[in-house]
Amino acid sequence: MSNDQLAAVFNAGIREFDRLTPQVWGPAGQSLITQLRLRPGDAVLDVCSGAGASALPAAAAVGPTGLVHAVDVADDLLEMGRLVASDRALHNVDFVRADATEWEPPSTVPAAGYDALACSYGIFFLPDTDQSVNRLVRLLRPGGRIGVTVWRRGALTDFARAYADVLARHLTGPAPSRTDASPLSRFDTAAALTDWLTGFGAHSVEVTELSNLLPATPQLAWDLILGGAMRAPLLGLDDDTVESIRRDFLSLLTERDVETLDATTLVGTAVVTG
Ligand SMILES: C[S@@+](CC[C@H](N)C(=O)[O-])C[C@H]1O[C@@H](n2cnc3c(N)ncnc32)[C@H](O)[C@@H]1O
Image: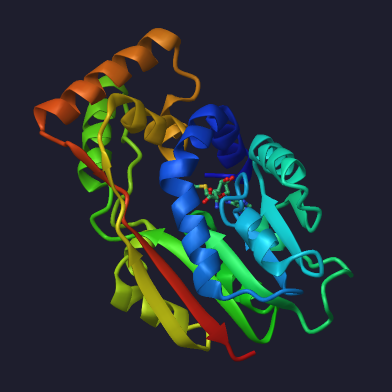
């Protein structure tokens, strides 16, 4: 997906995205920031920040002497982040519309680079993943930390398969889904994520598993479709078609006894040598 398409998908789903925050984005963002062990005064780059699930806790962790640059392509999510930051009087976080792969640190960032780079549920969207992440890692100072969250292998599998099957019934052409071609399969186990992070010249890799087994209520299941990238195939469809996809999808989850939405997530952090 191009950046414009990603922005259109995530902007369209802000209501559902927001409803997912307490159960999905929020716990992972907080865990990521805890594991990054930020210190007061740190400079943090948070790419694919969305509405700030990790950028807002990062801002609290680094305090008024630190700074957080939260970068995303989806304006409406960024605006949501700005409102929450303002409500919490967090003046040290800037939500900026930019392509993470082209980000240049402004002069407020120490010359040596950022102290930490965070990316929660975002690296699999970046084109040429390794090249993009390599470029971002070079924005860190020697000894800086990188931290990512990704879906653990098997997470949301039954759910995504049911959705793909329903789309195939309703749409012509291949139904987009998470397939083996997705970069996710390269870092969706603890061992694979450890190897992948080590490949960037990192050491002291830590990977923890955040178990997150959510009851598959119709509201949560459909929010997970509309509030994330799985919404993409629905853009441009008329309301009746979307409604009949929703009904068939929820019925298929029931038929297949999908009672739990497994949103289990890996949180990986490492120190970059520089
Ligand atoms: C699943 S959301 C996660 C958002 C946030 N990190 C969170 O956990 O709530 C993925 C985000 O990545 C953003 N994104 C994807 N590619 C991007 C890019 N090249 N530059 C900046 N943001 C990007 C999307 O706009 C979307 O907001």
